[in-house]
Length: 350
Image (cartoon, rainbow, N blue to C red; front, side, top):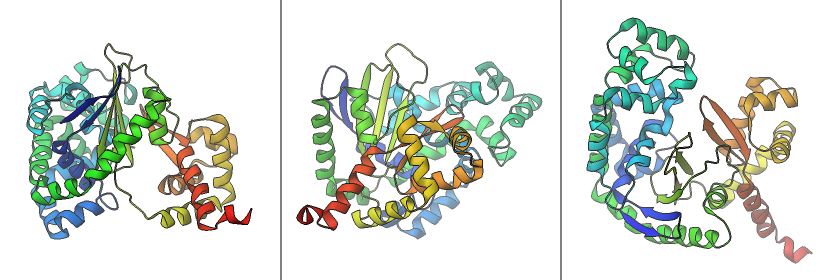
């Protein structure tokens, strides 16, 4: 783990050993998240992994809308200069079974379940069925749900076994080839921190205003090549002693600048989507149901438009408990305006 203290509360951290885990997440989410993994490992190898780790893929498919990338939420407990993939695996597997399961899903908000309820569900079929009844609209498979609750050890064993297989010379070569991007991310963080605190800097890097704002005592900025999203943010939801935030940011461009510009302009060409952006710009982060109510749209219409806006990067999404808060991406809009001015040589016109 490369570890650099930037100021009293902010740390730059880069771990090549964490990259295989991000690669597994990319593969679990599927296309288009794992395009780089396909280039590194090949479609045939990925298909073989899906067969070998069928339990992992099918279980994750059942619970991903509930747990998502929370698999790596345990980084909050273990981030340190001595971090290794093996130590991370050993830590998670050393936890009591009910603790592993309870930490992965927002049980308190899904069905008011406690850690004791999870402990009962490990053995009692009626309790397990009762828990599932509260979340079946978000989880398509009772068998997948049951496997996740009662076989979390196998779930994580397969996750880490597959992570180890992704740690290949091809990955190390790719990380070396992107070393300048790691340095560029570090330099950008340092530059932003000159005028902003840890929270403000995180918002600028993600291009959004956070709904959950801590307070946090430490901020970790981590670049990643294989992370399946532009950025992931991990934090303890409750105000706890020594609260941390970990921001994992992608160092790769998923589209060319021109592709980004065209996609954003297509999204803006729709009047309803433009109204949604105006609403978010004025009101700040909001849930989909609030957008639907204020703009007098159906929830399905809002969902469709938010997908379009999110895919081109004009809005951001932050899961909070069982809801999703959408916010306008000021960074993406600024980049769009700059790209238009550059491509159309507006400075020379005026």
